Structure formats: structure tokens, C-alpha cells
Length: 405
Ligand SMILES: Nc1nc2c(ncn2[C@@H]2O[C@H](COP(=O)(O)OP(=O)(O)OP(=O)(O)O)[C@@H](O)[C@H]2O)c(=O)[nH]1
Ligand SMILES: [Mg+2]
Image (tube, rainbow, N blue to C red; front, side, top):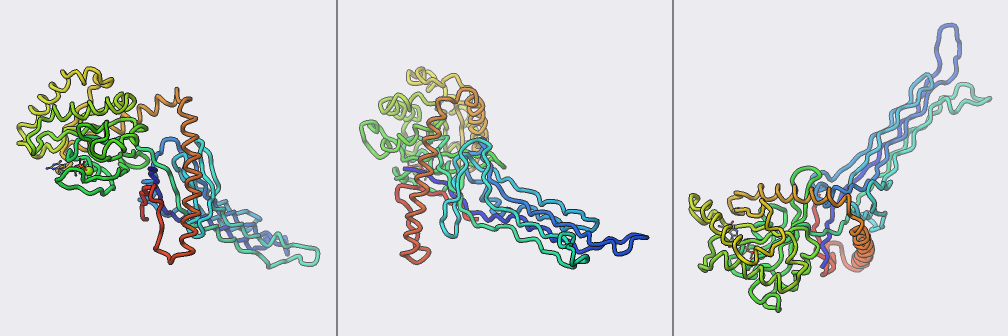
């Protein structure tokens, strides 16, 4: 299963400035001749790859982009200033398509790589340009040309940074709904979630991360019981797992036992996954009297920390490992997302130094995205020609997160 982030945007490069019609007029100089300068060229629009971005969510809030127009030329043969170029920052691996004819326009895959996407309009010429031996006083100028305008579709294959796990009904889907634009179904029966959902959590301009909600796990999951195990592999690329634990389960079960059940399954399933950083999130704190929350959290925390499973948890020394939240009242959710963002940022900074291993992996992923994008494009194009618009086919293996402008 692949997760694809999409955004539709409109870009308009700047118009070229008009040429100027002017004649030199100075005391004692008669018929000074033409001196109207050229206009400035319109600004162009470029994409530039930014390693610090990892989703297209910002484009949801700003779907239109314009570069500066060139200024008109002036007398005394002065050229108008060039319109300012616009650089739009996109995550590494973003593929760009023309939204109208489905043409593939390119992608940016290395940090700071730029791609010209819409050229600024050509500048107009001033009348000084048209001077000739036969026409000493030309009144001719040309206008600046409009810049290129394009409707674009951006695509990015998303890799979840954060994975949610827990028993059915632990509140995974409710949490992802509370912190992102994802809208998975929520209900008070187990196995509400049948396929993974991805949510993009946005913490302000240029800061976002991706969180994956997978179906609940149950005892025996590692041997195939329930649904969850086939989705565990999607968590293999996440950087931190949140283990969600209902603080007061309606079935009367003990949260600590529930925690141990899931941890055992993880261990049985794969060493790789069970060694991932893991935080404990105690959910539904609004269901217990407020004055009891702190005591219960402390109690559960202590019991978990004294368990054998916890002793083997490689992240056991982290101070930030326990988060009480209520996705319904919102209590504790921003503290959680802020801690995740900070954690991911710290990891990113570390990886700048020792990322050689992941370079190959990233390249592979990008190649995949690229080819995948082309295939999807071709399919969509074919289907548009066969079917009336609106009958869009989406590859059933791709889950698309599309931000409508
Ligand atoms: N009061 C309260 N109820 C919650 C909270 N979070 C989830 N719930 C309820 O718990 C039930 C299960 O929530 P889901 O988010 O569907 O749980 P899930 O972990 O996604 O469950 P599965 O998809 O079945 O694995 C629903 O009835 C939710 O309304 C919370 O913070 N407070
Ligand atoms: Mg769910």
C-alpha cells in the first residue's frame, strides 16, 4: 500500500514590462532622438526542494502563486526592473504534473535542486530600439508578454513518521481525527478500522508530520489473528510508535494487561518493530473523574515500568514516554504532537550527520514514486479519455490524500 499526498495549485509567472515611447528633450538639443527604454522581463516561478518539508499540506492553505511583473521602460533609455522570481519550496521527491493535460513536468529530488516551472513574460522593447537610418524618430514600441500560467498537480509519496498501535477501540482513529484532517470512521465496536489511514499533522507553516492509523491488534495477532498483523509492516518505516492504551476500558480489562498483550505480539511479530521507539499514550482521560487522572496515570506508568517487557524496551529511559490524553476534549493532544515534532526534528538533525545508509533507501523510494506517478498518470489519462470527467479511477493500492484548494 502506498500513500500519496496530492495538491492542486495554480502558478502565474510575471508579465513582461512594456517598452517606453519617449524622445530626448533637453535645452539646446533639438530633435534629441528616441530614448524610450525596454521593459523588464517578468519573474519566473521555480520549485526548489527543501529537505525540511515532508508533506504537501501547506499548499492546502495557499493554492495560488504569482511571480512579480517586470516594470515598464522609461525615458532616458532606462530599462524597467525585472519582475521578482518566485521560489516555491516543496518536499524532496515531489513530482509535478500539468493538471490540464496530465503531462509530467519533472520532479525535484536533491536538496536545493530547482526546477523552472513557469517562465516570466518577455519584456517589451522601447522606441530606441527601432531607430534606423531611414526612421530617426520611431514611435514604435512593443508590449511585454504575459507570463506562463499553469494549473499543476503536485504528488508526493508519503512515508508515515508516526504509527499508532493498540487494541481495537483504544481510540486510535479518534486521535488521528483530532490532530489531522484525516477522517477515518470511529465507532464503539472493535475493528472499525479495516485499512490504514494516514493523517498529516500540521503544526504551523513548514512543520508537519505524517501519522498512520492501522487496524487494532489483538492477542495472537503475530500468528495472524484479527486484522492488524498484515498492516504492521506499514509501520516498519515509521520513526516512533505510539501505543494507545484505554485508561478505563468499558470491558473492565486492566490497562496494564492490555499493554503487555500488545507488546508481546510486537515482539513475536518482528524484532525490528519491537525495537522501535515507542511511547505510551493513555487515552480517554475524560471518562474518569478529573481528580483521579493523575493517580491512575502514575499507577499504570509504575506497573508498566516494572514489567519485564518494559525492561527490554530500548526507549525505556525516555522521560517523555507517557502521555495522558483525551481526543474528545483535546486535553493533552497538543502536548503530544509538539513532543513528536520536536523528537522528529532532533532525529532529522542527527541524520544529517550519519545518513549515508538512508541515502540509497531514499533514492529507491523516490524512483518508486517517480515511476508510480507516471503509471498513475497514464492510467488516469486513459480513463479520462474513455469515461466522462468525474469518473476518476484511483489505483486501489494507492491511498490518496488530496487537499482540495
Ligand atoms: N470519551 C472518549 N471516548 C473516546 C476517546 N477516544 C475514543 N473514544 C471512543 O472510543 C471508541 C473507539 O474509538 P476508535 O477511535 O474508533 O478506536 P480505534 O482504536 O480506532 O478502534 P479500531 O479501529 O476498532 O481498532 C469510540 O466510541 C470513540 O468515540 C476519548 O478520548 N474520550
Ligand atoms: Mg480505528
